[in-house]
Image (cartoon, rainbow, N blue to C red; front, side, top):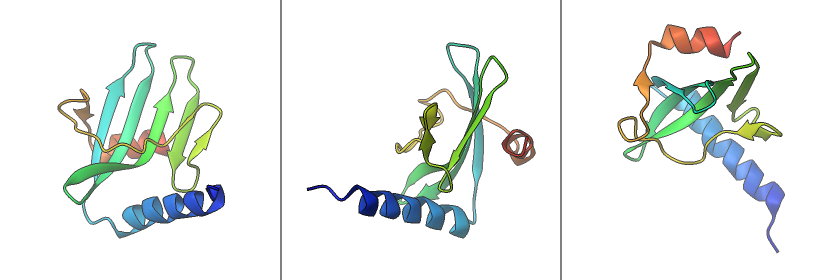
Length: 104
């Protein structure tokens, strides 16, 4: 039997530790097929870039935010896959731009 509460707690603990202990952060933006914009904050972990904050600004102007504090909802969730900016067609952006969207 899978212990979903334990798995969720471990997932939250992992992303929280990455976010709270990060000394280097990278910020990216990506436009999707429906004219929405995705903003991510990623930190290095074991040679990969892991997203610790993710915001989707839909073409209708709705903002959905995900982090260790809010992993998922009916609109989506924080990616659990490492990102590769070149392969994922992510555009590097200044931290200030990410924060402007994140705190909106």
